Image (cartoon, each protein chain N blue to C red):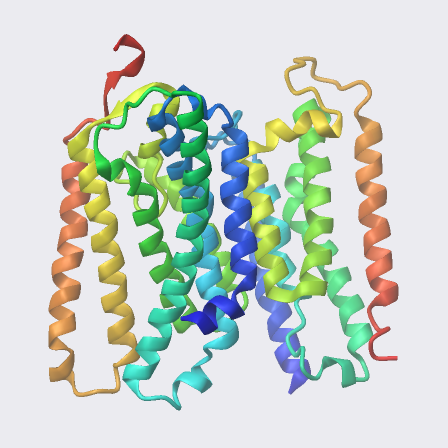
Length: 194
Length: 255
């Protein structure tokens, strides 16, 4: 019964992930004007901001009252984390494979999306739906005011050169943070049970 | 309602963050009162999806079908009304605090008084009403966790889509932020959009009422079907009329 409920909880985000992949593939680079935003926006910005939260629903503990007493809870949480990053790759794959990633705005996009994804994994696994809602709000703030935050991450978006210079360091740090957070969550997943 | 306010502590954090971020993005409040008020109204862009998501969250988490089905219809509706009101109070309180701080800054800096219509003060707050009812309706129809991000996204994207279509700004208004770009608002369109948001909120409440009392005799529901029909007609009328009136009519800089 619990297995069926859990599989249902994973199946719908999986379907959403495939739909997002199709949107990224067809309209990824299409401009999408956002009133009050601080810069030009593409569909990729919306997809990047909201994909972590939508597929992050598979990380939410569906049985918070009894999950600590379930014998396979740790494994299920690790599987959900693996599924989350797999769906993340599938959904954002078309954008990651596009020439957009080679540009400065593309690298900033990837850094920000990685950080938002890490935030979503932590908040969804630790705080459930409340955490997911918080992550959604932060993603929305990034869509509206992302260009304002760029200098804090070391990206100068006003620089028009297509290939960035010193920014790969920030991107590498974001990747390390994503891997580190995921591994930490994996190792601590079953601890409550033990 | 107090119980829902206590249960929804996350609401204070979310609404406070939404208003704070909007205010911090536009800190130069001393330009004028209208500019300051438009900044607060602009926070509806973040508050509207947040409140829709919060109401859906409380319906999905704490007001489940199994609990509702054991209560009489009047209690069910009162509970839903309390959830919606508690979340609206959270959003309005955060906007109110921002307005007090903004007013203090404007008074202190002797900012230009350029507010023309008193209704300009409430256009953002009114836009939250249909969002809250939409969240309640979605939360009552589906108990999946995905309802929460779906409502949030739908309300946020409605801002983009309605703006792109030139349609009235239901749910999250772009119109009141026009003074931030040195434009004044056209009064007819401003009032039409306020009325449209109120009518949409009422229509969603009527839908919620019909959904929750669907097991009752059809004759007892006729009144609410009529209310739903009339209010939906008002929403359509606003949609049609809005395109005939300009949104902005004057460049404030030329005053």
